[in-house]
Length: 347
Ligand SMILES: [Zn+2]
Ligand SMILES: [Zn+2]
Image 1 (cartoon, rainbow, N blue to C red):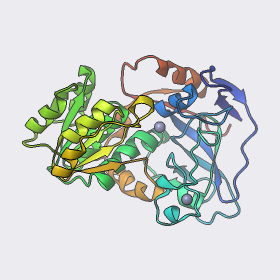
Image 2 (cartoon, rainbow, N blue to C red):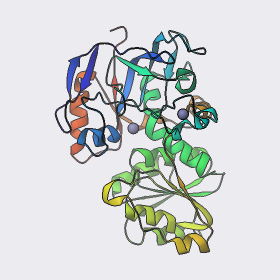
Image 3 (cartoon, rainbow, N blue to C red):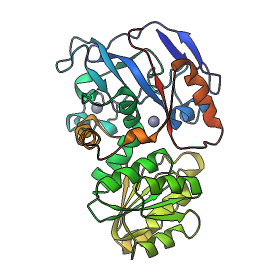
Image 4 (cartoon, rainbow, N blue to C red):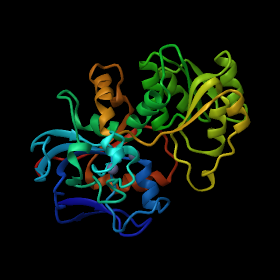
């Protein structure tokens, strides 16, 4: 099969011929039809997030099941499917409870095993991790849901518990932030978008943000002013010490901060104002992806047209251009639109 692979951190990812992966006894092989090019793949390629080498990137994909392992009971060849970017082991107590996103023995395509920049990708524990797609949902849109969109959805629903008319502050209007703006608006919330870049704020406005706040030292203060005392729910969709603190300080009493952006390197330990957390009885949540169990409610929103993840797709390219697209992330992005790789069927 064809796949894009890098042999060392930072080495140019190239299109190569690889043997087809083995199908796990409890898993499936998926013929990839579309896969997103995500900043997490770029971090892995740069060595910020250690992975096994050589590595095939790609963790947000959709496709068609081509082989089913002998232990799998619920899936069949020919099904159109996607999977969460965190796959659970299928054997532990967390997986049994449906919380595969925190499985201690989790696997992630593109990080712990070969990913979806390839004609075929193996998915373990398929009865747990594979999500069938609604008929009307195309592969490119489905691939765009797997990472940023699902993460934003779960942050707002499971952790934020957003209700209609709640104020939701979104700090950082990149891919996950704009997804959050769109989803919060669809849930009936009123959104304050915060970003340092004017074009990002304009995109947030188009997707439903009611108030736009320029990022910076007084961003939290301005969110509190605009919302009549603070947001009910605030997301740090960037993952930096400044935005994490600003998000917490944006909240009204009993508000909920959800940390969505990964806090890497020097940002690993933001100085959160715990005195304020106590005095206002704030809650601090970490959110890491979304398990297969929670997909149906999100897919229902998409199928009803209440959210339009397709609007967040920036460009569609072929597999031969995927390595260059990954490398291009070393330069500052002009738009937050997701690049999706489309693969031809039957290769
Ligand atoms: Zn598990
Ligand atoms: Zn991703």
